[in-house]
Image (cartoon, rainbow, N blue to C red):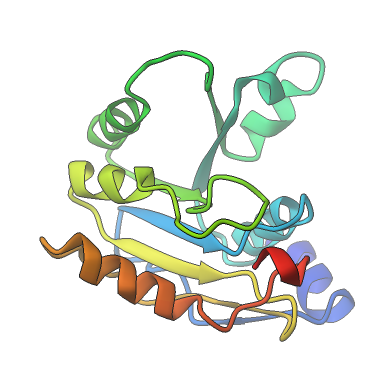
Length: 179
């Protein structure tokens, strides 16, 4: 799968990856942004396969129903019921705690539309599971995915978010006005 993904990503689509996902870490949260279009998902899967990274993601529960739900699970997905008033952050922290290895990728915006402020769930997941955050850009303007070194959260949420926003500042998504 790795060779095919690399061929499609690099030769056909002409994308590049700058940096790499940390191989020495068994657990971390990846925030990938900006998320502006449905095409971000297959692009992310290509990156996952090209890097041979065991990355997981969460998705709305309806995606995991028959007849195609098995595909989303095979791609590393886990369903989340967004209509229930459960503590999703704690449920995901529990997944980190129960597994020897777990890497979770998600969109900090929580939607494909333009947002002024990101959701904070990813932050509290990383904090609760005591794992670092790795940032990954989906930069359609430059056709590149830039992967950061792991970032270990401080006790200053405002400082941490300033760093995140700065990292993604010049990145342009598939739909630039949503970036």
